[in-house]
Image 1 (tube, rainbow, N blue to C red):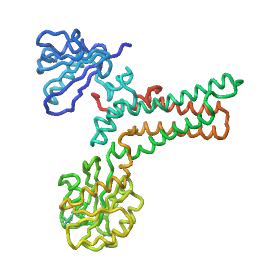
Image 2 (spheres, rainbow, N blue to C red):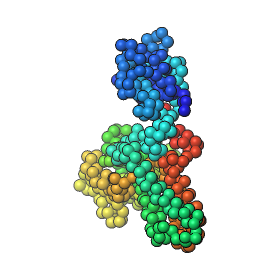
Image 3 (cartoon, rainbow, N blue to C red):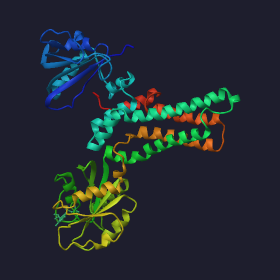
Image 4 (cartoon, rainbow, N blue to C red):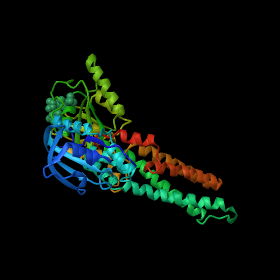
Length: 454
Ligand code: GDP
């Protein structure tokens, strides 16, 4: 199939060692030859795959820079097509000029994710493997990277194939039975049929139930820090994020807006939001900040409720505990370094707590352990296959619901033909999940979220 040739800058824009423009498609070599001249007159279109040539890159007659051209021959390239990568010194304007020169030579600017889309369409990777490329790029912690790498290596695809094969076998059993009903029995007993369906259901259920925890690891944990003024919220934020982003003073009410910061904590990423101290106030500006804090609390995955234990719990502190009741909340009993710390009240509430000193850093390790426990992240099998985005989650939900209905139908002696239709629905969802059977709209939607150049 004839494809047009696409190009894009494949490295981040900025000053650095090298920047690269990637060219992929049927005319990749011819287009690259127009802009790149090898020092030894090497002909790019005759070079072997995985070899490089040193030379100079031009825009028309104008010399732009020294360059290295790396050649990949179809099908042994990322996209499965002929590909050339031209690398020059890393500079934003320079690489844009190289890109323009390549476009002038006949390539089309690639859309977001178009290289990976071509890799998928050319059978170089399944849809979930293609999606894991995006997770690989955006991974902010070892655990997130681990999930993305495993999926990139096909762990999820294998799991999906395993379930698909089982469902196909069951459907084929039903169709043989429908074609020869006079034989009356299935090759597989009805009990085994049910067991097989239930096994598939359990696998789908595990994927679904692990998704929320996996999402926290992949996307980061949306964490709100709340507490009375002067409890030490900003100090905690700065401790966790290892910055001085939040202003720390002994003057109550300093943080009025929501201050955001990303923190790598243990194996996880916390997307922290430091908020205005929640308490009764007549100050209009402070009141807006408090309303924002409460809004954040409602949408957060995790709440760190900070209390100044150098003073007895106030009515504001007690009211705050009430407000956090419906959220996974860790009571952070701060200022533990002060001998006068009064922690008994909080300890007897039966809520998860940790004693720390945000000032000295004492108790930080325990805080991470408590977060892991509270969000049940330790229950996640690090070797389990994991869904990594909403599309995958919704598609597995569909498959799970259909399998569940098939089980109920079988148990209530509905005709096998009807059971077969429900299994077909589950199969359709699983085939869509890994891109074996998808519409152009679904494919476009998947790759739209990718960055240009990938
Ligand atoms: P916020 O209003 O809740 O953000 O509180 P800040 O982080 O601004 O801290 C208020 C005051 O308490 C500052 O003077 C901090 O230095 C002090 N502080 C915060 N955490 C601790 C702690 O763990 N120990 C001690 N001794 N002082 C702290």
